[in-house]
Length: 200
Image (tube, rainbow, N blue to C red; front, side):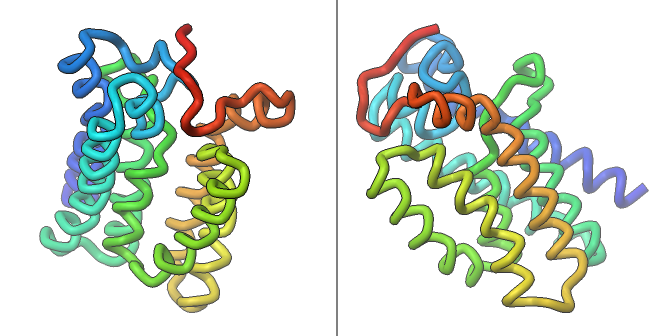
């Protein structure tokens, strides 16, 4: 029962749609009608401003970290703590409350790996920033960082099977969630950070 409970709680935490709720409160609108159609911090910033975006980033990361820390607190084995982290990211991308249409999982994944292996996050941060500052594509920075995550985790902890599996699964989820962004990047129609919002 404990593994199932851990997964249910992790999904519930991950599925809390903070970005959607913040934009609904501030603007009375659905954030998914803006930009890439997600509920994450970048889209919230486009729709409701930088402060709303920063609050969303913090809360989305916090729920990812909370899922991992709670799994540890409940005495979950390392494998189940890793599963809780992946489940939180899954919940953010596929929240039952929004018809399974949520965000891209980046901030929630950030929180998960801050709790699991903060050194990996510190090593990935310069990669993300370099790509975003060079191209102004947040999506490209997110995709690049997600793709690098399993390699960084493996380099840091080559014998930690559950953590490496968590990194692989999380990377796959985040990249899959960015599939429409990848299409727009290839087509040259992806929105750059700081550009005016586009509505759906």
